Length: 476
Image 1 (cartoon, rainbow, N blue to C red):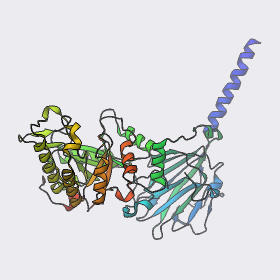
Image 2: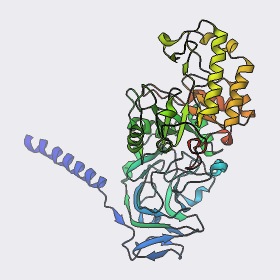
Image 3: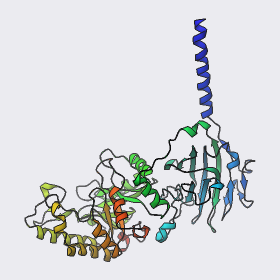
Image 4: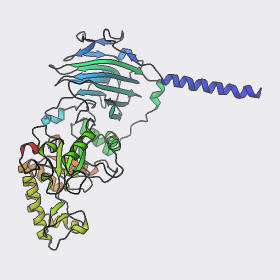
């Protein structure tokens, strides 16, 4: 009798576990077999089937909502190919929500480089969310098949994978349907191997309600309301920071990252092969690939062709040739010798002017930095005349100025003056480990200086990079 009393609950428990496991293993449902669509999939009547594939052009759509048990909990995947100029959307928002509903979920399909002069209306590359976190560099390419997967969970948690790389992971987005629409007039989107999986109802309990603090609210406002390009170009894979950790932090904060390599004498990259190896390691990842040019001799170490592999280049004046004729790294106290502060400042400003006038860089980083030994005299040593010389040099060469989270530089007065001169800005951290922060100082300066999307730098397309249009004496 006692054995039966023990076995019965055990049998019930095992049955429940088996049922739960079965519930998790819902079958994938094909939506298109190469000839016909699933009976519950609807189109606008103009979508064509060509060579076993679905072709969508301007305003043509495929509504897969009927094939899903619950459009608040599903997993969708397809293979997609875009023509140059093609753009489209996967609309997850219930029609009753209205296009202006806050935090609605629409996933972008777009792999073509765009003119970002009107960045406020730019929705981003494939995997971006309309009015949300944007991808500024596509993981996929036009003319090539790529895998696209979209998962909606708990009617508020959206995840997007492109070529099996997680590019978007955000809570607070509303769903309610699954509709694929082509937006471009002269280019088509082609799909194959479309399928969907309904997720179990218990998935609705997996995600906690979204709580946004002031920083998250500002980020959401900048992304969604004013189309601000939140990009941190100065992230290094240093200390315990791996690429995986960096990309996870990027998804968490909603800030797109540029991952930069240190290149120059006594730095990790010293020749062309080092550049090619680094770029290859990051190819296909959802991030920009940057070069931090170290020292003043860096142009002689690399060829123009190799340097142009980077999306952008930045440098600073933290490595100079001092009054003794020695190469001095200003962040290393043992290398700093300042017998005359005013003479040092004059040398520093001349060095910055020379850098901006002669080195083909996109961004001037760590701006107005001073060595620790004189840092407390910042406001006295950085006179208005010296600041103006730096601003003028950046303006005449089209070089953007970094707003440094780690150094909390430059100060608001410098940013306002540089903005009046037409200078663009970037966000940077210059981290030493995985402590990346949340762009606190940059967000503060954006508020205080009233920066808008047009004030921010975006990488130039191939053929228009400074390294390609400005001459200098290089290795080759």
